[in-house]
Length: 342
Image (cartoon, rainbow, N blue to C red; front, top):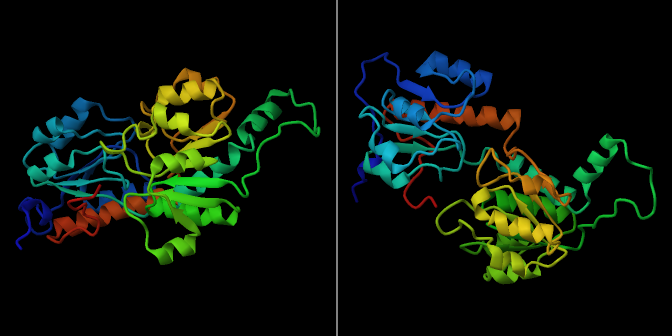
């Protein structure tokens, strides 16, 4: 079967020794930027500001390759207005839900990402939230800094142990599996919900039980952690009704995408103590965080740092470089996002 135009490498004609015109929308690791400057005709984002819509439009009209990140929403209108020379969106990061894939493919634009790089980093941070929220670690740290701590007492700063509790994992891809692997070592009972059930051998290795009914998983779990991509189907997947199914002693952890949760319903449940707490690394209107969340003691709030390691960010940058080089040399990029990615 012949491949579609968007699945074949596509590049502007170039003379031997020429370099692709590349625009990078955010500041990357120094070693990555230095290597890009050696290989490409590159424009870097020196002050690391988030591109405005007008800046994105201008960049897309003036390059062969755009290197966007999750902060750049590339919708159908922007892609339709891109210059004819734009042939590759070399995304920095695994998630590409900020890009209208259908519109890009219709223009013959290749999309690549950096899969697998941040799996362990995000899973480590998720486990930190799973531990910190029930044990009130952030609240305790603030107490010490405030100078109001009066010393140890048998009833002071009591939290909940996590050993023996049920961890409900929503989305069992790379990160969900990495979380399950870590959680098993802490004695958590792991139940997961996924579009497709994992092979039995993998379930046994992870000590995970499949629950096809998401409502049942939510109602039965002591800690719920989200690891599914943002899509029309998953937007608001944890809505007011499902928050209402949670135990009053349960905790919600979200290190995936802020749009997966009905934030207003979550805040209402937290304020009324209808659930025990939450650990959040992502928000629906980043970098804005609802002031009501800031006022709650039973919430741990992080500034979208799931992938924020020196090692991971540098490896991701070099993956971007590899994808650009493969494409410019006329080969299929190793991390091309294909049909049916979601």
